[in-house]
Image (cartoon, rainbow, N blue to C red):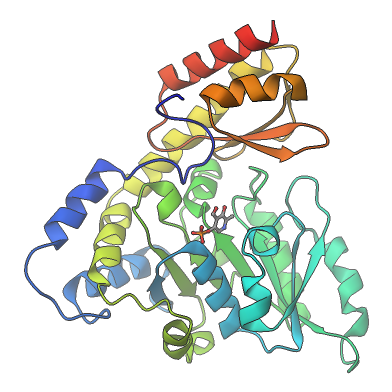
Length: 342
Ligand SMILES: Cc1ncc(COP(=O)(O)O)c(C=O)c1O
């Protein structure tokens, strides 16, 4: 097996600057559960990025951020509209349904993006007691298919949501990759676009663990401290998440790491595209590359490189770049692909 693979940005280690931050935070005692100077500073940094009116809460992981963020803004008779490919729909073991009680209304979207026209049919039953009531549109930014919503696409979804008594939730496990891709800052593609609640990703961008739930209207967060604790996501040693965010977002580490991962994905796609047997299936807009590799070659490649087959029928495979992907990694992998398909 190769030392680094393209299976997932979660498979990467921790960025050395984050390790340093963790070491520095490991001095002495501070008050637990978030009443500490690290959390105060990290909160201010989030406010600098997203605006002073936000409420931000740190949690252990991305599933927790999504589930609890959604729980805060829904009743169990309501529904969340999302793409069929959404992490909340396929990769959270039903946790969103279990903890919110809401039905997920999923929509087929080949590129991972939701569009207003696909959401409209769900409004048919609004006000009708026999139907769940659509309350949230949830999108992933970047999407699970490696694509990125433009600012105007997000604004259109937010406007539609707000015109129909709904809220816009963003699963931002890869929001940094999306911001870099759009050459935007974090506020422009969230608060300014009309997003109501954001799961802000840390782990995929070089943190060891830790994500944040950001509310752009503090009223929506009024019960969140209870929801987080009851939802088992109140970290006692909060300072270690806060210290990581302080380092990730205090300077340009978030942007540097995401920009590097995105660039590596583009290089990988460009190289794979040169191989006639390989077909790139999605626009490479963030740090993911989707490629159809004839199924007969996949086992040989997987012997050396762990990666996921995303669609068994078409043999579409997913390759993710991360902050530590190198051009050598790409060269070695592409050389193996070339040799295998010859
Ligand atoms: C789009 C997306 N959202 C959320 C998550 C968070 O998942 P976890 O609970 O594993 O941190 C992931 C992780 O793979 C993801 O890809």
